[in-house]
Figure (cartoon, rainbow, N blue to C red):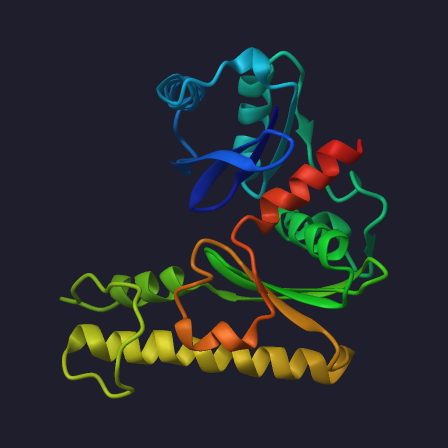
Amino acid sequence: MLLAIDIGNSNIVLALHDGDNWKHTFRLPTIVDESPLFYKMKIVNQFWESNIIPNHIDKCIMSSVVPQLRDVFAKILTELFPTPPIVFGHDTFPHLKLQIDRPDEIGTDLLANAIAANQLFKKDCIVVDFGTALTFTVVSKEGHLKGVNIAPGLETAIKALMGNTAQLPEVPLAMPKYAIGKNTITAIQAGVMIGYVGLVRHHLAMIRAEVGEQYIAVATGGLSKILTELKDDFEIVDINLTMEGLRIVATGL
């Protein structure tokens, strides 16, 4: 059984693959200053509650965009499982050619997205990841990562607005019925949610103007199904795309 771990800025996702399907997925909050014991016990408890035997995991791979947690999790995983983890980096999967200025700066989650899109779909792709950041990763069918576009994610945008404005209520991430809000919540939803529909479409149009209209749009990330008006703009929606990229790397090594 394969364990894939994606350490992001907001959440840490752990997923188990049995060779055919993703069987279990767990989410932990990303807390940089928590102790290694905290995370170790969280993983142990999740496995115990799901009747997962650590010795049945014969391969483990981790991706981290949080440098402070990379070594912490590498040590925890080495202690918990029979084989040491594969620590995924920009030079782990040579089949992906990085046509960017500084390969060491790109997030490993974006690399995993590009690998999965390239290997699974065999087309020119723009991978749109709706996470803490909203990212557009451009990868050709030949496996050339041409570049990335990064904007604040939906939750990040709303939290930034709430953090700098007095007396704002909690705003659900949901599409409003109207473009003009009648109260504070629907006004913010109209501004952010509807605004992001336009943002995504405009970025896709500008990227295709540079690289070609044949590039299909692929959506992933925990918030990929929130903007319902965009459902026809994406040829594929795969919430597990990052994990699929990690799986492809781990099974190919």
